[in-house]
Image (cartoon, rainbow, N blue to C red):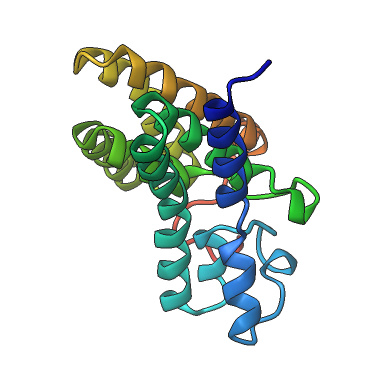
Length: 198
């Protein structure tokens, strides 16, 4: 039988993570369904394609806040390790939300939210890797993949094998969600920042 604390962390984290802020904000502000434009994604990058930078920023913060809040609540009311479980569940909810037929976002903002509250030096290191890679390649997906997949090794270096496992699971989920991007990068067809055609 699954322990009640684990069940609460998994279900609560998933439901919190599955709130599609990008879709909700776009509809509330009269922009229609964000899934019908650009890449069809529900994240901040695609919301930005509506021309509303404020809504894109709000989506970024809220998507990051989902795993952060899941971690904080589960750590405080259940057990510190349940915070890690809840944050991973929130990422799953964001990437595979039941309300949208399990077709959600890529999970990068949600990853950073969880990582920053779990181990802020790791969040800063991954953020720096994202910025450096984005500046060098001008490819958002490549920056995301390199930053999240470097997290387990950095966490081990910081002496946190528990965070290494936690971030490794999140990196795997994000890599799976980015599979089409990975294929386009290999083919040299992945869009870059500033490209007119998205």
